[in-house]
Image 1 (cartoon, rainbow, N blue to C red):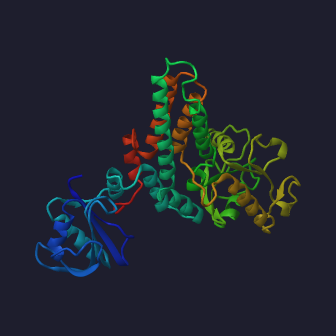
Image 2 (cartoon, helix red, strand yellow):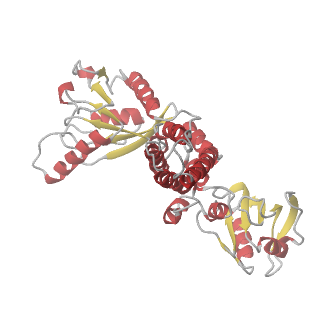
Image 3 (cartoon, rainbow, N blue to C red):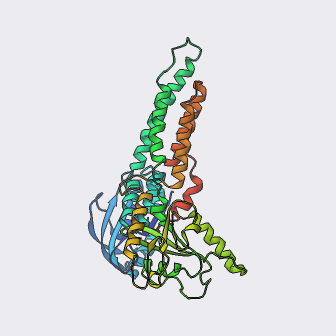
Length: 422
């Protein structure tokens, strides 16, 4: 990270204003080549931007300087708030990268430098990635809690308690050969108490349904009205509807939001016996989705519905005198549509963290569960040496969640989710 990076950090042009950001050891020198003396730190000053290669005027812009380590990346930063036309932005970036030591940033590189310089930890970087991708208010608020450091603070508190418990375990090892009763009688109860605190977060709803949408499989026999129901909920012709059995042969995913709750409707092939090779593959995928999805809208006979939680029985085509089993719905008259949406929202809210509740992704959840299990084992042990080892395992799991240890393999994948200017 000895070079200086530059990228557009605001939205795609054209726009009224664009923010171009540089970060690195040559950020100030590059700024001086374009604007002359760099303004005082954190003071926005209007300057003329000129191309140092030929002296041509690029634009007039606000220039703001941030000194290391008190900046977003922990490095020297200069931001240019210029007019948001494509030609202006390109001219400014080209003038900057013409300077020695300055290059175009890679995706997520600003945030990666913030992580490397200790400005944020891995949980905040993951929360920031989700914040950038948030499309609903619930997604935004959940991501903001993690990007704002709530998980980091909780992990830091648990780590401090683990260090204190480990120190007490080491003392117990030193006195292991002493007379009975000289050990730390409160050590194991305190370990059990910390494990209980962790288990509350381990057992809470995870972030994936909120981030990716609650998967709602729409399943049943051919011509039951599955595709029509998907189109009605999506308020768009997303799935092909015909009277020919077997029209849908593969999974069709349709993301929607109802009252701010994200869902992914999955239209599936009609479940029946078939000699058609392609249709048979679709049917097998449909069966798998019907078992895997968080919710299932079942349009077949109730006695044939999969035996699993989350099934919502639908009586489709009520305008044609459909079955009396389940919620009556007609895509022709609109009957039952509002009630079905209310049912989906009610079921969906039970599967999601509340707006301000901290939620973990799969990686964080699995590591925290690993740490909590180590504490559970430690609380049942008598040997202080074994207790100390289990505490070390729990501490390592916490460090891997926050990015202190063992995360290099996932950083490239994480920061690839970011834009160039972030």
